[in-house]
Image 1 (tube, rainbow, N blue to C red):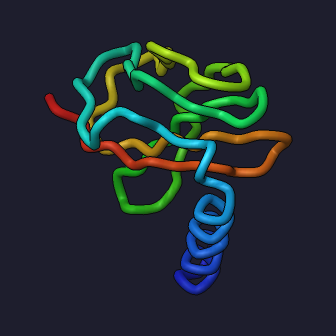
Image 2: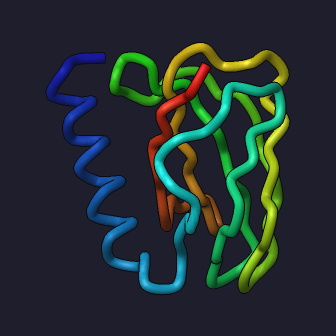
Length: 110
């Protein structure tokens, strides 16, 4: 995949999440402890959806590490099992009906 393709995908995700992010968001900060289960805290979703955690170590979306279903409304204490403790940064995508409606990248604290 070329750098231009990656930039276009990232811009599309950013535009999509900005357009509908008023009711969709991750309330937690920008740092997570390295653990096999990542604690994202409060996740707000306008509809039922899924949180997907991906490797983001190279500044681009990499391997899918784990998923967790969320309900419409406020979802307190969302935790995603990612198997192995991530050593690098991750990105969380909130998807509703297959569309990314919010995202947040997290620095992993070791």
